[in-house]
Amino acid sequence: MTFLVGTRGSALATAQAGDVARWIAEATGEPAELVLVTTHGDVSRESLASLGGTGVFATALREFLLEGNCDLVVHSMKDLPTAPAPGLSIAAVPRREDARDALCARDGLTLDELPRGARVGTGSPRRQAQLRRRRPDIEVVDVRGNVDTRLGLVTSGRLDAVILAVAGLVRLGRDEHITERFDLDDWPTAPAQGALAVEVRTSSLHDPRIRAAVAAIHDTDSALAAETERSVLARLDAGCAAPVGAHASVSADGITATAAVYALDGSEALSLTRSAERAALLAGSATDPADDPYYGTSTTPPAGTAHHLGASIAEALLDSGAAALAPLG
Ligand SMILES: NCc1[nH]cc(CCC(=O)O)c1CC(=O)O
Image 1 (spheres, helix red, strand yellow):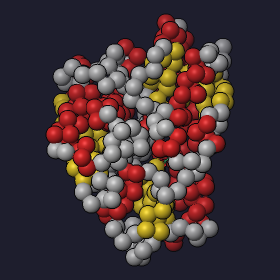
Image 2 (cartoon, protein in one colour):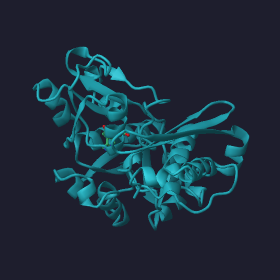
Image 3 (tube, rainbow, N blue to C red):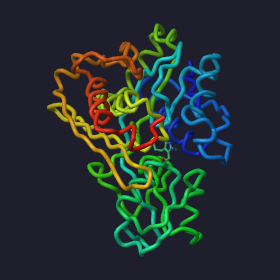
Image 4 (tube, protein in one colour):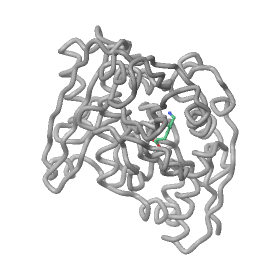
């Protein structure tokens, strides 16, 4: 039987859902096909904030899945609200793509090489703040549109550069436009950037065919890292448009996570790094996220889990005045 993979119709969404369909087909030996849904978020040129912030991309896809139009849907995990969706489970996080942000500048220039007053485009409050912090002399231009539209602003000469996620550029085969990749230690990106979330109806986790498919494409380390980062956001009670960066890296020993909150004008930032041991993480976090009652929620997590690590970093940032520094909600 064919696996039906629900996706939005944008180039990026179909590219990443196509990757998931291919991985499932390879792992199970059964065919997988894309089923398209259209959402307001895809056609709107308004800013994400004016659309009501988080979740505009996810809601229509989730309704589509709940209505039984497909077996699973694929989200960019960074665009997914941290609140759980009743009746649905994130059943797999495939191996994560590069989490870094990229500069795509004219003439192969890096951020340091751009001239004074250069015009650099990004619609993300976090990227705007990070940019202002590194280069206060640069003119930050608020831009909208898909990846190709934004790259076109540079090739047409209207902007000197744009900032985009490496992951999206790679998935679209546009990474030749990248002129610099920013180090995650001093330029942490959106929580779960580069990760995909594969969501199913919770009831369908009883179906061995669905369980086998999601288990085959799940990557525990990617899920742990993305979970930790999203827990920072959840505990801050912040959305995907908040000027918050987070990055967790998983090693044989454990997980180290950094989170930063920025003043929108780049004048100030709070940053914090903490670690947890791997044994504690695995004991506290289910390897199958569908079995983890804390997955993606903002409820108080048990000590030693990825959620606890993320939440403890967020609490320390709040204690240091993060809420006064930046609009988090
Ligand atoms: N906010 C839009 C968005 N959502 C997911 C990606 C691609 C990166 C990813 O998969 O995390 C992008 C584009 C971008 O930020 O450049």
